[in-house]
Amino acid sequence: MAPPTVSAWRAHVDLALEALPEHPPSAAPEFVCLEALPESIGFLRLNRGVPECVRGAARSGQFCAVVQEPGAATAWVPRSVLPALTDLAQRDGAEEVQPGVGWCALRVAKVVSGKGEGKVSATTGAAGSLCALLAEASVKARLLSAFGMEVLLVPETSLPAAAAALLSRGHGIWPSTRVCNSGPWEAPKASSEDALCQKLAGVWSLVQREDPIGTLVEEYFEGDGPLRIQAPSSGLFVELRLAPEGAKRKSEGKKKEASFGGRCRAQEADAGHVLCTQLREVDFQPPKVEPPRYKVALGEASIEVSGHEDGGKEQYRELWARVGATSTDVVALELQSEVPAPKAARSGLWIFSGKR
Image (tube, rainbow, N blue to C red; front, side, top):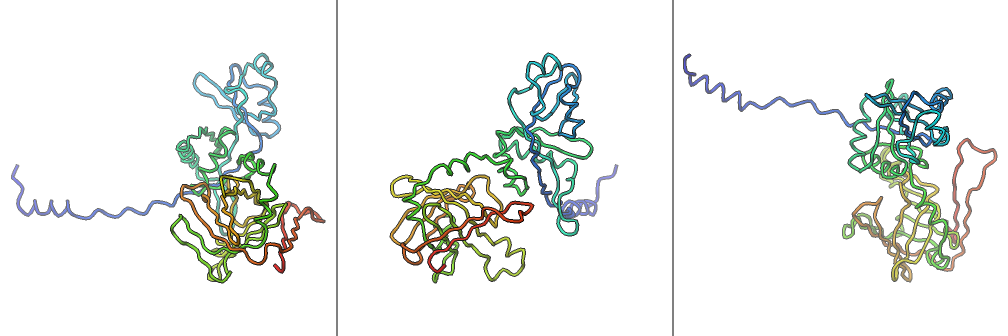
């Protein structure tokens, strides 16, 4: 075999240095919407055939599934149809894998926009990446897939953590009342100190906001910033955060419209601070997993607010100035009912403070 020539070596080097062809950009990540089914699901180990409760659930159109694996069979069925544990074991030869533990079924769908806007079945296999995402958040999830439909099963005690992990990656999950922990929302309703609510009542105008602390992101000089109007005693409040006039597109305006209202519960915190919890009934932004909380330092004509946005590590700080006198009369109205009643119940607030 003849040795390679100089020209052959040069051609070899040129090929080695040649730029590799660019790969087509990877497809954009698929964002999915998960529907949390209302039933609490039980997880059964089957020792002889399919129990009657599973058959009954299937006949009535309720969520249920039977999984056959080598040497074992399991079933998922609403806990509401389960008989007593002794009857389940003696009559049906089945038992709960984790007695007393309820699971939530999350049905996976994809959100589409434009013509035909709504939810459609997601690409098969999308739930696999969701399982990996939940595993990173230390949430143990199981996956069922049949006939093009995928369902994630998550322990009910882990639902708030699962919802937070999914939302942080751009996915949607609903209804919020099924997946959120109601404890943090119910606890503040029990008590609120009237004297503190009285100090927070009135009209307040945002002067500046730092996020994180030390980084100025908003500043207003002539009262043209967001306004907060709060009533004493009841704690009803409205905070107006309107979209800026420079919002060119409707979608951009909707995104920046961040007004909200509801009830503010105030309790004494450490020295010189008040701990406030907002129970928002109306919000132009997506609901949060937990009610917003922040600390307030009270001044003669101003308040300083500090907290963590959406549970993040970075702390923000806001300075608000009182508008008008502290003794201004306040009238607050809350929507109770409508006639004729709408298909979906609505919430509404109307607060007057002086001439505002």
